[in-house]
Amino acid sequence: MASDKIFVWLTTAVICSLLLTAGCGEPAGEKTMLALKFKPQDSATYKVTTQLEDGIKFEGSSLKEADFKDSRNHKSVEMIFDQQIQSTDGKGNAIAKITINGLKYLSIHKNKTVLDFDSSREKDTNSPMAKLIGQSYTIEIAPTGQVSKIIDVEQAKATVKGGSLANRAAVELLSPDAIQERHTISALPVTDKKQLKKGDNWSSVKTFSFGLMGAKSYERIYTLKEVEEQDGQRIAVVEMDAIPTSEMAEQLHKEQAASFFSKMFDNVEAYTGQLRLDLTTGKVEKYLEKLQSQWVAVDTEGVQEGEEPATLKMSAVRAYSLEKID
Image (cartoon, rainbow, N blue to C red; front, side, top):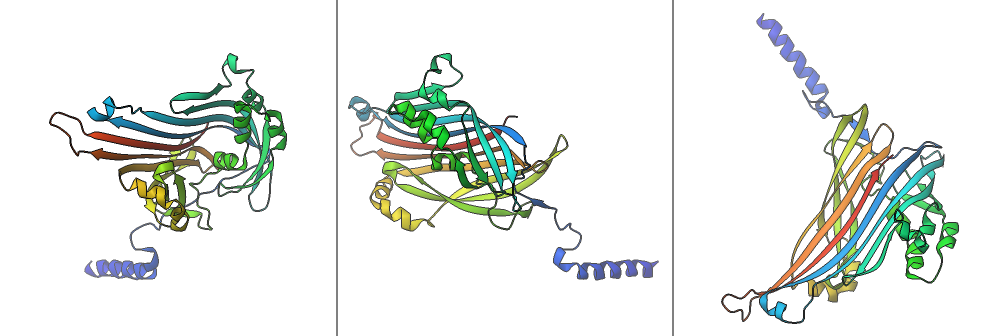
């Protein structure tokens, strides 16, 4: 009996030594391909929302008595579009036709509404921006989520050209930068390392400009948290956290004067995100990233008992979300 136990122990030890690189007694970990998949004539409907906001707020007895006014700049765009795959190539790239089905556009400058459009409102049907509804453009999308080429957008631009603010805003929505931002899925790995297991991570750098507060770069760190089973589908869940980085130091050096101003403030920020990718269909179910930052400066000099110190708060929001709705 004892000899049997010794034999089993020796056999286990030999097997473990042979599989040492994979670990003994633990699964190697199932790997997952994180990439978009495309099929000709396949289609889906998405809602994409972008938000850019900057604010300034004054607090304290001395400032409230003086002529200091809170101020807010805000720009948000919500677009509903159909994405139809027209063709694919041997590398998995796809030619996609994008058709705009719905649009909301809000622009506020120093608390004053500059442009407010909603394609679902009857009163907005005569706005130049209403001409965007039903318009299409064509792009090439890589399996890595990058927009590799903007193929045909000129016809859509021609329908909204004009001198009014609404015309210019509509043309801006069809600019290369706006199209890239709208359709790029930054949370997917862009290197050859697409076969990942739970806990693996990858990163990319993104830079934001904050006006007087200068520019700042962040390293976005993406981690494959888990693969869920949902209604017969396998959903990969990727979480994103970000940390400030000096990788773009040369570019940031150009805004040195502005960034010096930011050193007078205490800064609190949070930059997070999540991607939910359907591994069965290769389509994004939901993707969002949001940066919230606040700078605070407090002047306690000369403050009398019972008075509130003069406080200046500056805030910024940069947000993006994409959701499959059909």
